[in-house]
Image (tube, rainbow, N blue to C red; front, side, top):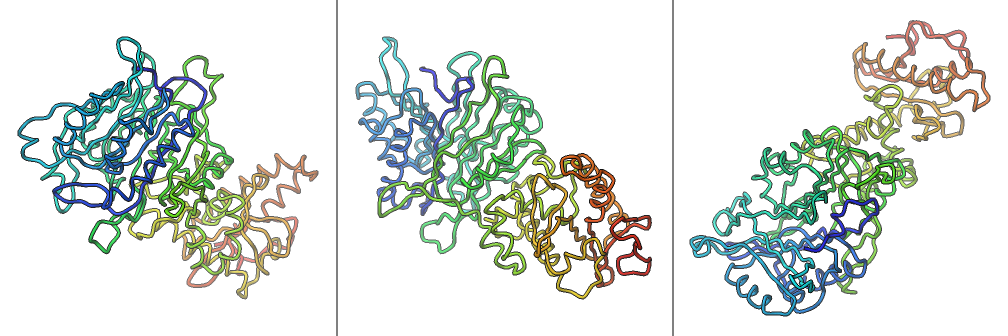
Length: 577
C-alpha cells in the first residue's frame, strides 16, 4: 500500500475534510440510509469534489450517509482521491448480494480493486443488509502500477434502538482493519457506531500507541456511557501517548421518515487530542470558536474540539498525530479551520457560512445581560467565560484560575455536554451543560441588577453603584467588571443566597491574595508605588451575597484601607459576616 499522507509522522500539517450530514433518514428492516438517495447524491458528490480541489489528505462522512451511486461513480472514474489521500466514507446500507455484484463489476475495471470480507451463508440468507464503511485510497500492484482500492469494512455489533432494526436485519462483519504503511508510522482504525461496544479495554490498551481512531456514527446519544467507554479508557491510559480520536456524527435535528419529531437533538462530533505536547492558546480557542469548533477539556486533561451542531462541512489544517525526529522542530498546535461550508440547494454547492454558537439566542432571555455580553463575546468569547466564572468565585488555583486548564466552564463531564455559556446549542435541561449554563447566566443576571437597588456601597467601589458592565483582559485577570461611567476595573463576586461563612471568607481571601500579588508584580510597569497598588487591588474587590433576602457586602473584620480610612462598622450592611 502506498503511504498515506495523514499517517506520516511529520511536523508539516495536512488537510482533513469532515462532513456533518443532515437530512431525513429511512430506517426499516429493508434498508437504512437517506430517505431520498438520489436527491442527496449531488451533496456528497460536491463534498468529494471539494476534497479533491483542496487536495485533502483525509475526508470522512458519517455512518449510513453516502449513496452507493456515488461509489459507482468513483469506480467508473470520478471523483477519486488524490494519491496519498484516504477517504473514509460511511455508506448507506446495501444487501450483501448487491455488494458482491458491485465487487465483480469493480474488479473487472482496469486499475480498480474492491475488497470485502466473506460472510457466513446463514447470515446472508437470514438478514437484509450490511452497514458498510468504504475506505478509498491508492495502492501499487506487484508491477508498481497504480490501483484504486475500495476496502469495505462491515459493522460488527448491532446498535440498539426501540424497533430493533439492526438486531433483526443487519448482517454483521468480523473484521476491523488497521492501516499502518510502515513500522513507526501512525496507525488508523475506524469504528462504525456501535462497534465501540466491542472495543474493549484490552483492545484499547493494545492499540493506543501512535493511533488515529475514526468513529463514524448515526447516533442519538453519542456520549452514552456504552458508546464512549473506549474514550474513557483512552483518557485513563493514553494521556502520554500519541493518540487522537475523530468522532463524526450526523448534525443535530435529523429527521426520521414519516415521523414529525426530530430524531436527535445533538451532534456530538469532536476531534479529541491527547494532552501530550499540545497547549492551546486563547488565540487558538477563539479563532476555532469563530470557525465553529468549540474547545473544552474532557477526561480531566484531553483536548476536545467539538463541531458546531449545524449541518456543515469543515476543512481543517491539522498536524499528524506525532512527528518523528527532534520534537523541538515539531511544536504541537491545535487544528485550524480553513473553511466552513453549508450545502446550498439552489446553487447545488457547498458555500462558505459563519457558525452560530447559539449565544445570541440564549442570552436574549436575560435582559440585563443582552445589552453587554454579545459585544464582549464577539470580541473575545473566553472573556465572557472568565468574567462570569469570577463572578461566582473561581474554583481554580488563586493565581491562575483563568487559564484554560483551570476554567470550570471548559471542563466537560462524562456525558460531554458543553458548559460554556458562549456555546449554547443544547436545550435539554437534563443535560449537565445546559443546567450549568443557565445557573451561571441567572447569577450574572441577578448581579447585573444589584446597582439598581438602594444600598450603601463600600466607598472604594461606590462607582459601581450607578451600574457596571462585564469585562475581562489579560492585563487585569482578576477583575471582571468596570463602571459604566468609566473608571478602574474591579472584581465583583456574587455568592447568592445564604452562603456559608467559610465560603465567604475563603473566596474573599483567595481573590484578595491573587489581586495583591498581581498588583505588586505589575506596579512598576504601571508606575505605582507597590504598597499603594496592593491596597488599591484589595479595595477593588467586592464580594456580595444575600442573607435572609437582604443584600450584604462582605469585608473581613481585619479589613483596612487607604482609600477608606474610616473602615466599616460591624453593624454596617458592609460589615463582616
